[in-house]
Amino acid sequence: GFDFSRALIGLQVLAVARVALEETWDYVAQREAFGKPLSAFQGVSHPLADFDTQVEAARLLCLQTLWLKDRGAPHTAEAA
Image (cartoon, rainbow, N blue to C red; front, side):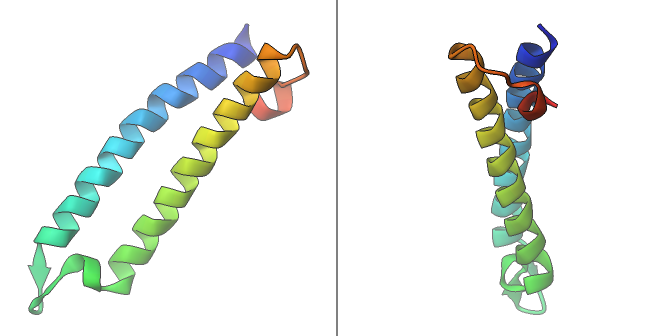
């Protein structure tokens, strides 16, 4: 049951992370510094893009874990 729970809890946490990232993107698009939106600066946009990628990769790994479980395949490594 732990492997199944890990995947479900992971998806719950990732939903919160996704909302936080969306709110952050909105904020940096509106907030200005030096006459430009913060999102125009690579030091802001690149880390956020990296976080977006990591959240999406983690989401897909959780879904793969659940897909394997549904098929009765080993899924401990993916869940961990």
